[in-house]
Each structure stands twice: as structure tokens, then as C-alpha cells.
Amino acid sequence: TETDTDVKDLFLDSHVGVLELSVRADNCLKAENIRTVRDLVNTEANYIRYKIPNLGATTYIEIVKALALHGLTLKGKLR
View 1 (cartoon, rainbow, N blue to C red):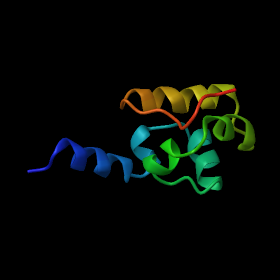
View 2 (cartoon, rainbow, N blue to C red):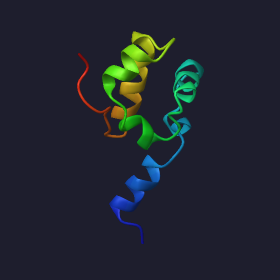
View 3 (cartoon, helix red, strand yellow):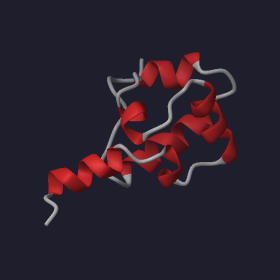
């Protein structure tokens, strides 16, 4: 049987598509080579919000909410 840790690891290693983000969000993350949920949660919140071209406040909030539905957050605090 799979443990909770195994299930969480499988989810973290899943493509960001499992978060059912908008096309804009998906394309912005893809352009930054952020492919898995693990890549995403290991990326600084400030980087996601301020450094990724074409990723504005609405898309940032979409990403944060999608992660929160799975009990996850971005790395660090938004400044």
C-alpha cells in the first residue's frame, strides 16, 4: 500500500497540468521551465509574481489558490 508520503510525492512529481491552471498560467510556467508541482512549490513567490513575463497579479492569485486547494504554497513570502 502507498503511504501518505508516497501519494504526496507522486502528486509533487506530477505535471503542473494537474492543477488545472489557465492557458496563460501554464504557458508562463512552461516558459520558465517549471514543469512539475514540485518545481512550482520550490520556486520563490517573489520570482513567480514579479520576474516571470506576462504573469500578472490575477495569474499569480490563480496559482496560489490552485496550490492551496492541495495544501501547498509557494516558497517564501511575497514582498
